[in-house]
Structure formats: C-alpha cells, structure tokens
Length: 402
Image (tube, rainbow, N blue to C red):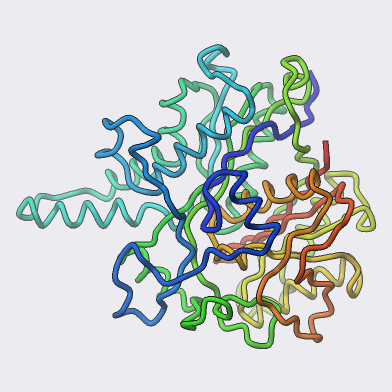
C-alpha cells in the first residue's frame, strides 16, 4: 500500500461559518466572524472581542446523553468529526476497528470543563476534584470521545504544542498511516471563550484590547497590537492514498511534507527556528521554494513576532517572493484549531483557483511580503501552512493538490 497520505474529508466549525460550505463562502468573500463576546459578559475584562462559532446547537447533532458529559469544545469536535467522516463517505461501522485511529491536538481547550468542575465543587460544599480527573477528561475530549463514538480502536493520541499543535497532529497522523493504519481522523478544535479561559489567555499578554472588530487583529500592519482569540477549527479525514483510491474516495489534496523546530532560549542570541521548519518541510515534500504558490501565515499580530515570521519567509522565498495570506484575520487565532483550518482552506483554495484574503490589514512596507489583502485568482497547486506556538514551537506543512 502507498505511504502517501491524502485528505478525503473536511469538517469545519469556524467563527465565520458553521460547516465547510458556509465557512468557504464567507472566507472567499472576506466575511469576518469577529465581534464582542456573547458567551459571557466581557465588560469587566480589558479584551472583549473574540471569534465565536455562530448558530451551533449541540442538541441538534448529538445524542442527549452526551450533553451533560461534555463542554462546547468537545461538542464542536464531535460534530466536526461527524461531518468530516460523512464528507469522506466513510461509515466507521463498515471498516475494521483497528484500521481507524484518531490523532488530534489541543491547546487552550478544557478551561470551560474545568470552570464547570470548580462551580460544581462549590455547589457540592467543597468536594475534592483532582487534577488527574481534569487531565483524564482533557485527553478523552481530544481523541477518546471521537474514538469511542465511532468505534475506532487504532492509534489514538493528543498533541499539545499550542498553535503549532494542529500541524503536529496531522504529521503524527501521517506517521501512523505510513506504519499501516488505513484511516486517521485528525486536526483540532479549540474553544475556551469562558471566564476562566479568558483570564488564562489575558495572562499571556498577547491579546488585543481594541474595541474595533475591523482593526483589533491586524498582523503585518503598523497598527498590530496583539491577536483576537477565537473558537473552532477543522477535523480532517486522512487516508493512505491507495486505500482512498480502492473505495473511490474524493481526494482534496496530499499531506506532502512536514518540518518542526524549537526556538532557542530567550536571550541566547540564537536564530528563531521557523525558517528551518519551513526548509525541512520543503525537503520532506521534495519541493523547491519556487513551487509554492501560497503561504498561509501564522500571523501573530505582535510586531516582533511578525518581523520574525516575515524574515523567515523572505529568507526562504525572497522579498515578495510568494503570495502570503492570513484568513485567520476573519476568525481570530483558534490556537490548535487554527492550522488545520488553514489546511482545509488551502485545499478549498486549490479547488476554487483563488487565494482568500487577509482582511482589514494595511500591510506595513517594512515586512517585504506580498500580502494578499483582496482575494486573488491563482492556480494553487502547492501550499505551505506555518504555525507557531507559545514556548518556541514552530511547524510547517506542505499541502499539494490532488
């Protein structure tokens, strides 16, 4: 069987569209999903904007018995997995259980569940809830719940490397397919728009405090002041190419190359590792920089981080050497869910022959990037997705058209 890994199903839950069709229609037209938080009253917090998934009613999609056991992140992930499997034409009950696995990522998720446990703790008069219980749930949400719901008994794991984790999960899924697993459900959905999760995100010091949805998250712009968080992401079905062909599956694209590095310790004077991650991904894919048609940027919207990313892209591709886009300006940064959503966007862009825009950004000339601020007709055959996580994680993934 071929060890090449292809994408055969997409399940999307995004602040600017629930479901792949709605998401893509909004993204290609530049529609933003960023606004004032509605899931709790943000008046007492310095940051009040987020990307919230609209119109999601878990009771329409999941059995009622699951609702008391889960929080919003889990429910979004389970439904996105259902959509991805349906899109791939996969009925899990018809495949051998050990031929299917789940590899997902998580970052900020789990806060809403933890907040609920704390509230329950007080309502029970001080009954102890252990950290072990919380971490056991944390694992189950990301992989176990999807595995159990679909009877998947193959490899199961969760990757935790902040925003880089979504790409790391897809890479781990590709490794499992190379080792012989036929199908892996992978990607990530994150959701922590709740008071406890919000305080934790504020503590990182990178949240935008702007009250203007159109100007709060503007990477590579002289007005950059931090990012707007969001909830959601994408779950993908990955398969061995030969297995997908055998069952006549539609193929969106191929996971062709991957690279990951760590930044040196702060103050050490070492070079950031993003360039090396990109070069490793290109080598793994057997691709030259000139073959890349678009880069989906990490887009931190913190000036020093934007400069580091722009420096890496110029070093690999040359000044304005490749179109660069950051559709996450329409959704906010979705932590581990962001990069899988970029991968889904990349394969949709390949089908449509266009590069989606980076909205509301006035590119600062000093970055030397060809930033796509209005959607651009283009033949997209090879895309590079980059992601960075707090703590020095860098990941890059090359995606090729089917």
